[in-house]
Length: 212
Image 1: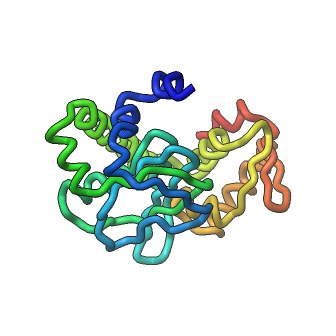
Image 2 (image 1 turned 60 degrees about the horizontal axis):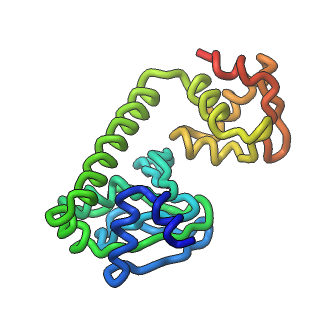
Image 3 (image 1 turned 120 degrees about the horizontal axis):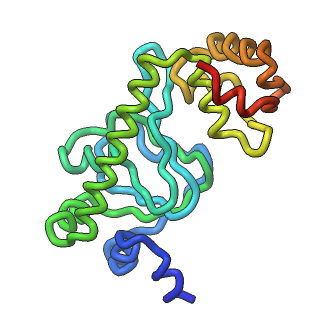
């Protein structure tokens, strides 16, 4: 069974499985704060189960979700902090109960010098995440909120129901609760969604994807 699991793992995860003596396993509950703004990154977390959310906090207290870290992946900003010896510029919290591997910062840099599999994983990950952040910046700068909200609902709805709050949507999209409420009312007026307490029901998925 172990052999089958190893075969299915990405190359960088197979490499990490061989470094058990240098890695600490962790199990964290939902909403646990993994890393706060301004702290140094002494370890790199690689998620094996669950989900980590990385958010930015503006000077006026508004949040925006930058990205999520899913199984077999790690935090782009943590890598940057380790390599540049800078403090963490965001907030990382557990989005779904999480299991993972903690790699000491010294090993992260050592393996980049010594192991091609690990080095290429880090380079590819940083390139991909940087591309995603550029797309997020473009979306925030140029797309109307109605479209950003409609896109978010399309992506994050399970079947026809999305369980969330107005404040959570505001945090995801980097705006205020009041602005989200107005945008939701607009989508409702177009017969695209139905608003319920704590949930949003999608009435027209195709129409939602066509909001401009």
